[in-house]
Length: 140
Length: 138
Image 1: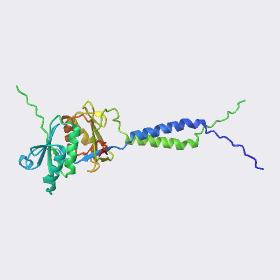
Image 2: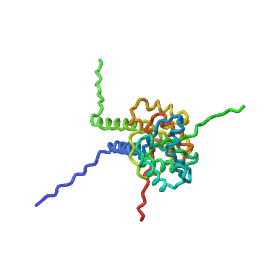
Image 3: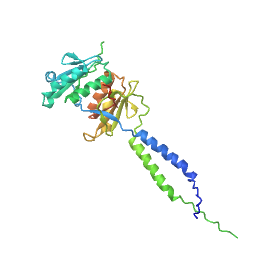
Image 4: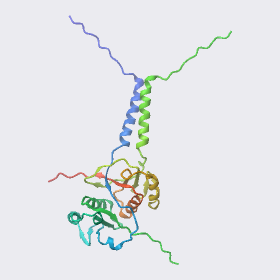
């Protein structure tokens, strides 16, 4: 005849529950604080004043407005711009020739700008920003 | 007649040492990794084909009010290049990552001077963006 052994119930110590809760809080805090971020790295030449106007005019020029992208004077939409910039940069081998001068209208939204700059970088272009310099003129 | 008082000894329980060590470790991890820019209100733009970004030396943000911040502190775009240069110090190229968080409604007049300042300071620019979901509809 088999005798059944009575099961003994063991309670976890209640004093440890606050420690466990505290460690769980910290765990979730760390998870929230160190979320990995995704992004797009961009190589930009160091900012300098425009000196050689003649040299710059040889580069590919892109103007971005809220409604269109102008490549060397021709207004295009993004798919056509992608095709043309790829074709234009494919032939260029020297770094100096791969410079793409980007000029944006002041009201160009960031999502459009970042899309265009991604296309230029993926095509192998070296993005350079052309900005209008601020000058204060006092008239007496 | 004087009766000698019994000396009571108070000892720290040794089994708590593991917990204390673990908590201290987490505390320093948070201090090292988390830069407090959580108060900045911004929404990232979406873009396809983006990668995980390596840890930055500095974070520049443009919030929904189009104000500029360097590591959580408000700064004017004119002062940004100088402040960023001192943060980046003599770090070698490739380890001078600067995260740029631009609110998706910002315009070129807001973000271009900031990009120029990062470039002037010699920072390796990383735009922080949200991955765009590619629609699978035929």
